Length: 161
Image 1: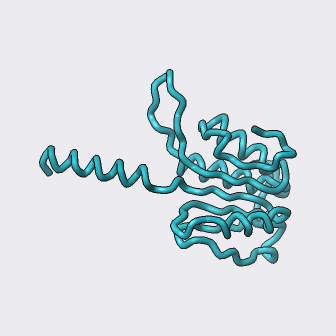
Image 2 (image 1 turned 45 degrees about the vertical axis):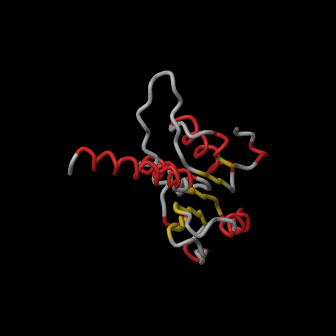
């Protein structure tokens, strides 16, 4: 590929990248599924990203229609363990916080930035449900990965932003 072709390809790629929607990350437990369904209904058909729903048991897994470029993952607490090495049961919010953290660590690669600039991690996040799942997820996204707190929606009662 010639240098001119490479430059043209880079310009086209960066233009396409700037028009592409940021991925969506929607995560909640069973107490906020009605809100989640409302959020999903407002997404554009071309939306991409991930939905995590923590539920008490496998019997609580249902169907959630989402845009074709999104994936839904159900997280039954009864099928998961608590803190590693304890043999304890998975507490409310633990599976959700772990899933959000793992997804974010993999999918929200940190751009290379100068010391004087703030990283621009593009993602739109909605977190709902119990504080024990929402707070650790929010903290990891905003404080560890540099996601702008304005891009993360969490229950106002938790005063996380």
